[in-house]
Length: 207
Image (cartoon, rainbow, N blue to C red; front, side):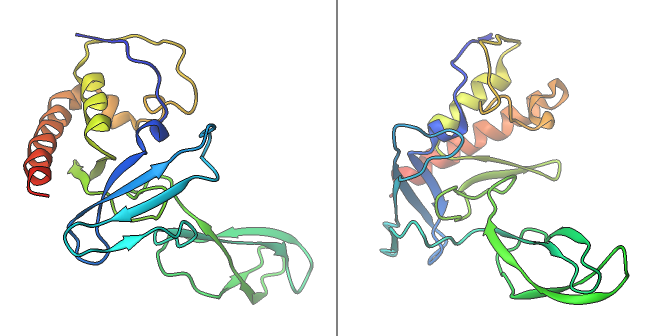
């Protein structure tokens, strides 16, 4: 089998994303009207999340519910040495943290600036809700936005011959983790994808 599909970026599949409703935990759909330019990340887009189970709706794009990461980038309040500190990604930001200067060893408390964190988390990029299509494989999370996204990945993993048609740094295939690309995991990944697709179709038929 030969894989020669275009080098789509992940955002290409993001016009419809299935998530776990933050209110009832059942499948909800995030629909996004993408702008003309989407790389590296769209701006000025319009997103809305609807849940047909409980009626939840969210269309406020500024309301981020996902992971955030905090940074302190300033000079030491004691000796003036510049430093940059970053927190672990979290869903619960806090106002400040105590940091010990590596030069003067003085500990002081500093205010934290928080920013959205999207990388390596199974969440949608517009609201930060947990993705519905995700599965654990050898302590790694395999996640997809929708059925088209899943089938595109399945075709790639199943292919014995993968044609490089000028893949760029933003393409989905380029940014896949190595454990997905590895031939030793091919059968397991395919098995998981097939099961996810089967289960997903059954659930969608009931919505």
